[in-house]
Amino acid sequence: MIGAPSCHAAPAIFRAGVALVDITPTNFPIHTAGNLTLTVAHKALDPLNVRALVLDDGRTQIAIAVVDSCMVDRETMDAAKAVAQRVTGIPVERMLIAATHTHTAPAAYSCHGNDAEPGYVEFLIPRLAGAIIEAWRNRVPARVGWGKGDCAQFVHCRRWIMQPGTAQNPPAAFTGQATNIAMMNPGCANTNKIRPTGPVDTAVTVLAVQTVDGKPLGLLANYSTHYAGVSEAGLSADYFGEFCRVMAKELGVAEGKPFVALMSNGTSGDANCVDFTQPNWKHDRFMVARAVADAALVALKAARYRDWVPLAMAEQKCSFKVRRPSLADATVARDYLAKSVGDRPTRNWEENYARETVKMADWPAKKEIKLQALRIGDFAIATTPCETYGSTGLAIKQASPFALTMVMELANGCNGYLPPPDQFELGGYTTWRARSSYLEVGAEPKIRESVGELLKRVARGKKP
Figure 1 (cartoon, helix red, strand yellow):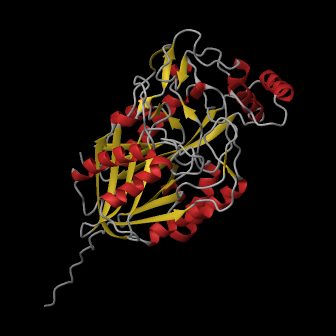
Figure 2 (tube, helix red, strand yellow):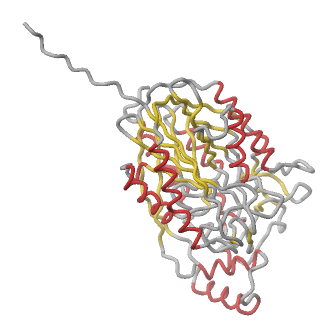
């Protein structure tokens, strides 16, 4: 008697692919982002790139891309995702694109003294999509691991409570903020500063993939400092790009080998590299990259690699009110600009925020944003499209059901600073109404709660 054939499902294979695509502009001069007043670059100091990682557990595929840009709006990212979906079949809701927030990249979003370069945005879209497509095509059987290091040296709260009357205080008609007790970047020698306004997240969180024979394939890192800056005028990927180069060298990857490191921005809305309690504080993008890379290498040494883990991803769209200027404020700002500025670029806080008031006068009453949560085994990624405070990032991590959670800002859009409600009572730059800060005062707790629910959703079915 011939027995019935037995059927055994083939074991799932975990795959990963990485890619790097150059996005350095070819046409100069070009407006750069991240500055209060008009800034133009005439050269590139180092390459700008979009780096991508695609993960595949045999059932679910997810794509993560990090772009060397100050900010990229949702419309641009959505356009790139749609192109990538047509080739890869990965649903757009399982794609994450985030900006590093380098302040020395072409303007891809209109903000403060620098409006977007339309030609560069068109140049960017197919390259964002192309990085995801190439990473998807490059998938190979892989192992995945994660870990956490610490780098307290270069992340410090940049918002300080000041002595009464000493904080910057542009007209309330231009900022929407009547009281300003807090000040950004007060300086090391400023005797009027009292204390920082909040905590910072010093973690260096790392997700790493390697080939099945243990060779480095790629990694995604995350750190919560704003940016490092460059001393010479020109375009630069800042410490984010330098970190990726250092990691490739440290992991022994020869030039041309298929290893790609991605460095994302954590929750740095109120943090930067400068310790304002120390005189003669020194830092540059090379120092910051080296220190963060050392912390990442410590995390990798302790990482345990898995041959297979489940993937899951959830996305939610939320709408929030916009802090629009009143008709009276817009009229005052328009008259002020006509009399005091004319056709020249703005030169100071007052002029710039008058311009922002006019630019926002016809904005919609609400804006929709995207939030996401990703699961890679017992590792999670939570995202916001905002410049998020350290306190918010730490709270999301603390409430997460996962063993280790990375929180990534400026993902899937750029919807301005996200101060917790109590920070509006202190005022200061990050609370002032502008295209860089406009969501309703109560947005932060709602976003934090929604992200927490998304993390719980992707954790369902996870073993305790």
